[in-house]
Image: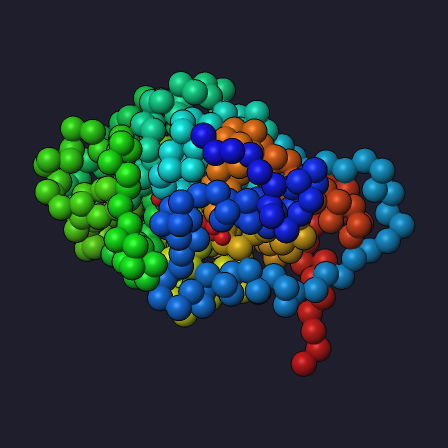
Length: 369
Ligand SMILES: Cc1cc2nc3c(=O)[nH]c(=O)nc-3n(C[C@H](O)[C@H](O)[C@H](O)COP(=O)(O)O)c2cc1C
């Protein structure tokens, strides 16, 4: 779909070697309003940018002479093995970046043996995604609508198509204010659809926002709705968007199976914490009772190492996957996962860790204030 061209700052023969190279490529090649949609954060983008900067404030405390000739990055999430602790966070509208969008993403995750969390706002249906990568390990991200029939319908669909967990996004009772989308009057291009809403569009609301029904999210959603969700499915429930120890404790008390520490890539509340800064108090509160994951700002292997050292079981990447799609579809997403996992393996080895269980808090250099 897009002519393959290397970042203009590089020699045309030079390979893309890190995630920022893919970012540069996507910025150059995607239409401006599409790029802005993927890149934007809320308001002044302080939280979006702090997600990245926070990693640079953390220093490692590496150990030497530990025979790192063999390293093993495998881990499990919710009992399923993945080849490295890096999964794909749910992001909307992949068909804007590559013609078969989420189907390519699903094939890449399947090939790399990691977890893909498909978004409610996918531009391919849950069925198309599972057919594209029948052996893939997938979770489904859910929003709750005023019309609960839509959520119930989606849950039945994902159960029927082999998705292994429901990821309930809890940080979006309303959509955050993203200035560039307003300036660009951004809308999903007319040839694309949120296919999971087929048959529900008319019932939900006539107005559209981003090509999805507007004002139809249920902003009254509260902790009691976890019990409603539990009554609909036996799949593990993971809450995405937890940022405090108080909510982490409530999550455990409400019987969910996992938490993703997330601020939606800084697209919701501007001024909230960077996710890596929010992680330690949550891990300390949860005390291993449920699994804790993290997303937001992961761009290098040492970011992954820091997140695991501070207690995340696995991290998820959002925007970099879209950059990979914009570069070369399935191949591009595989390259992103390969580069990030190679960097992670190297960071592990250079800090003296042979396997995931050797990564712990002692790897973090706490400054003496
Ligand atoms: C373009 C875009 C679309 C997103 N769409 C969704 C979505 O549909 N559902 C959801 O729960 N989170 C969504 N997110 C948030 C991501 O799941 C994730 O929290 C965030 O992208 C992680 O930060 P990163 O992009 O720095 O890796 C979206 C993020 C972006 C950038």
